[in-house]
Every structure is written in C-alpha cells, then in structure tokens.
Amino acid sequence: MRRRAAAAARASLPVEIGPRADKLPVMRRRFVPLLLVSLLTLPVAALADFAAEHAAWRADRVARLTAPDGWLTLIGLHWLKEGKQTIGSAEGNDIRLAAGPAQLGTVTLTPGKTVLYRPAAFVEARLNDLNIGATKTGEAILRYESPDHVSTVRVGELSFFVIQRGDKLGLRVRDNASARRKHFAGIDAFEADPAWRIEADWVAFETPREIPITNMLGQTTMNKVFGKAVFTRDGQTIELLPVADSADATLFFIISDGTSGEETYGAARFVYAEPPKDGKVILDFNRALNPPCAFTPFATCPLPPKENRMTLRITAGEKNYRGEH
Image (tube, rainbow, N blue to C red):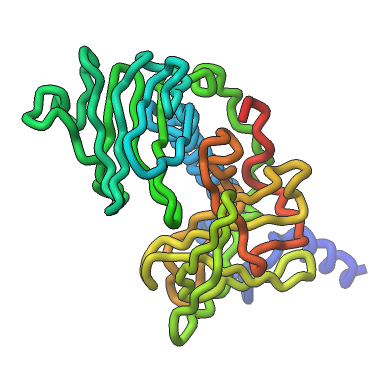
C-alpha cells in the first residue's frame, strides 16, 4: 500500500524535462513550458513572414506587368527590311500600326544596320526630351545595340523602339491605352506553399559551359552556364541549368514541367534565383513566372533547354493566363 501511495504521489509531480527537473527552482520550472510554447509558435511566425513576402512580391509582379512600359502595352512587332519604309496606322503604309497617327513618318534601315527615323510633318515625336522634328537633320538614329541604351520614340500614348533577334531587326510598338492593358484579367496561381521553396545544391562547373537556347522564332543562341542546381523531389533527382551573365549574377531558369500545357503555360515558365551561396541556391517555384508570350503575341520568348524539361509536376507558381494573348 505504501509503495502504491508513493507511486501515486510521484505521478502527481510535474513531468521531468531533462535530468533532475524537479530540483529546478520554481521560476526556471515555469520558464520551461513558456520556452516550449515559443518554439512551437516559431513555424507559425515563419509561415506568416513567408505569406507576407510572397504577397508583396505578387503585388510588385502585377504592378510591373501592368505598368506603362509593361508587356501588356505591346501592340505590334514589325520586322524591318533594308531601305526606307513608311510607318503609320493608315492603309498603304509599309509598316501599318494598330494605333497612332495615320502617317507617323519613315524608318530607314541602312546596309550597315543603322536605323533612322524621320517624323512626318506635324507629328511631334520625341526621343527622350528631344523634339526630333526640330533638330537640324529632322531625324534620329535609333540605338539598339545595348539593352541599357535603347532609343525610344514617343508620340502621345504610342512609343516604339528597335529590338534585335539574331540578324533580324524589328520595331516593337507600345500603346499605353492598349486593350490588353485595359482588360488585364489578373494572374491565377497555385496557392503559395513553403514546401516549394527548395534549397538546392549548387554544383559549379570548373569552366563555364554553353548551351543552346531556342526562342519562339526558331532562332538559337548559345548561352553561358556556370553550374547546375540539384535537388530531390517525389523520389526524382532534378538537375536544372540556369543561364547567367557571370558567376555571381542572378540565375535565370527556363523550365517546363508536368503541368505545362495543362494547368500552366505550355511553352515555358521562368524562375529567377539569387546567386549561389555556400554551395546552395534557393529555388522558389512559388515565383515561377509566365513568360511575356503568355500575355502577348508580340514577344519572342526563349524555350527551355532539354535539361530543364521536367516530368515532375511543379504545382506552384503562375497558371495559364485567362485573358487575351
């Protein structure tokens, strides 16, 4: 009886946490349960931070897409031929625009690949803050050689500039009042899930490699790859190759997966990642983007290299766009 009573008395004591917990001072014994509660709430706080960061990123994504210089404002892509070409919205122009003045002027492509623009009479066309028609020559050279120094001509809500794709030069035309921008249908996406924010191993190459990337026009260019991201998911080991400008630059992954052509855009999705650190790289597939071609026919998007075409279903990131494209 005495032994049973002693056992019952011991059972009524606080449960031990670590050796000789019943010998701890009262304040320390009270602190232990509070510490456990704090530890248990940490994942909840981290989840809240993840949700807040993703919401902020999503809002910025929509703002950039719908901006006056966003992809939704594109209304044309016109490939140039050598010589002088008239440009405007009226019939009979060599380059007929979907909006803007009936006669906008002429664009000339020289044998040396220089592009010149001369505005029509009474058209106030501006290049930066310069009124082109008021210049001594009455025309402007449209620079396109560097992405950071592209010449953009503006006439009211309309603007255009030159792009180069391989040996082709074209005029890309924007309209701030475009129907696609006005009727933007929003972005549908899978519910954000921290499990799709994957810490992958980074395997750096001893010497950079080059892989072929083909675009929607069928043109292929060689792109530098400085390493590969490796991770395991659903029993599959995945190795993805990102293109980058240098070994310490942002990584650009062009991917397709088991959802492509079904829930998600069939051609590709894009994932950007910070440069690798300590042999790791973070791949957040919740931020898998639809390429510009998902929103407009006037883009020339790259397609995934064969190494980045997964059978794994990436049920994260953006889904098919519901609006006009």
